[in-house]
Image (cartoon, rainbow over all chains, first blue to last red; front, side, top):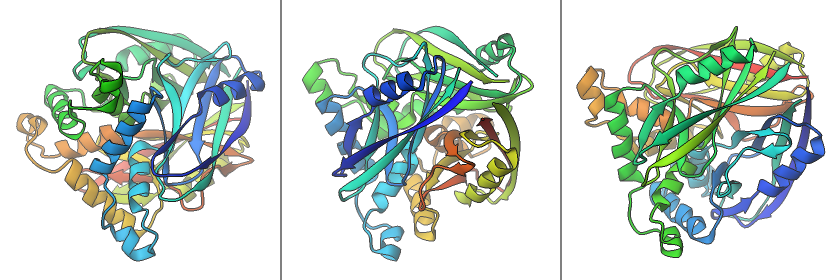
Length: 138
Length: 138
Length: 138
């Protein structure tokens, strides 16, 4: 049994820009030498989300439009207090979650063909992002 | 410390059909021989969700009606591109998450009496589903 | 490799009262003597949520107002069946999730400065709450 910690660094434009992390996570699993276990994928930050989706252009537009409707950019108390106008990004992040764990076996992620692990940046400005990819297993 | 990987296979009708996985997960934990650890419960697929709920008829209807309201079946870009009319199922899945992990101790899930671990199938057609149940611990 | 299980006990007033668990989780990690690994933070119960947020007054009000809008207190089938009028709390809990796992390294949580791990109590009455904090790693 061992634990290996790796990182994915990204430049994003925000505004629900979505990044497919699947192949990089898969490479980190291979490089860890761990056969069976869990990979924790976790954003360092509070204005993005980690989830799975079929990574294609239609759904990328749909998820942005859905979140613009459910958690719109409008007046929030956070913005009034801090003047940074990204409260909607914090709220979307809390709803979706910033961390999710996935099982792998014989060095391969146990996810579906049309199921990519993604990072979505909800912030309203370009950011440099760091995502923890931690493998644990045997 | 060891890792054991098991699977739950299900036939579902979709349309927010909900399945209580708790007793099957509990049996897999017992069978693993692992006393204390984490069980990762993870759907292979991108049109369902894994979460916890009090498993009773009222809430099963409530969650469907809530999702029909928040993420309705209507026009989405994904459907326009692929013609499969299940974009709402993908979006619900991304919001809820397809994977969640739960701690157990002395072979028993540390969940509440009214808290069942469930799979909800958001797709718009019957499916055969495979859910990974991976135990890790000592 | 080892597994250590700890608990956080809380008295809450419900109605979206939010508790910052970060420093207590960090202390449990230190006390476990585990350097690198995953901490699973998991509510025992089905009417609260575990997530991350920037813990400040504005966002605490915003998340309550957002959930009051998305998953309002109104008529639900669960309440009609059981007469306990907290169906909205169950539904918010299922959407947000009751369990989330976070990586740590050299005894320190790999979370951001403005990213606190929180418990939100969605129930409509005061509760005593128990949250599992389970560390696994080496």
